Image (cartoon, rainbow, N blue to C red):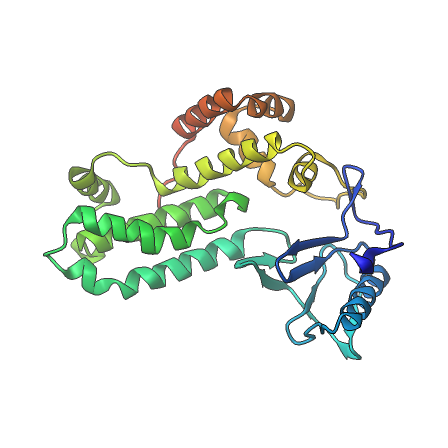
Length: 288
């Protein structure tokens, strides 16, 4: 990329300089200092203009993490808006680097899709098998988008379980006013479609599969980011729960053991099955 010629960024992961993330015509610029981001943006803007292209200042945003300083970045003489969150490739990125907001948005969007299908759930001529197929294709798929990247905590697991229970009640047309317990609802659902994997287990399985895929994807940027460390000192206080902490908790393995296991595809499949089987299910507390 012409804009990066002679540019030395300060963001380093595992010894690898990372200045940008690109997908199609979307690009994220990464910098460790406000002046560095301003310089990088100017370089990109100048290169784009030489090629007859233009960066949209209205659509471009600035997000800062772990910094209280002021960040001023300009494109074409117009200052870019600094935000606390923005949507990139359909997923919400926040300045606290947590997944809470994205999970809540996924649940809200999927719940809206669920509500829009109310005529289908009420149609007694549609079999439960057909309803379940529609639910998976039109609702669950919306919820699961990007779930491989989520960092889960106890509260988010409860919200996911509550969303799944809401879906089951809609399919079965069991209203909360009937005082039917969640356990009874699950039993009713299993009587129609048999035993099935819980939604939280699907999320965990996808994350574990993605971990194995990235570990075996040698020399990739994703592999470097997953295994590499960053410069700097962590702030005082309780450490934040990370994505890799979830993987460790579910498998009971330390990082070195995870790497060795994931490099063997068949062994990793066994680890995933064991992790999903032994990982405790959080009780549903929302909407019950």
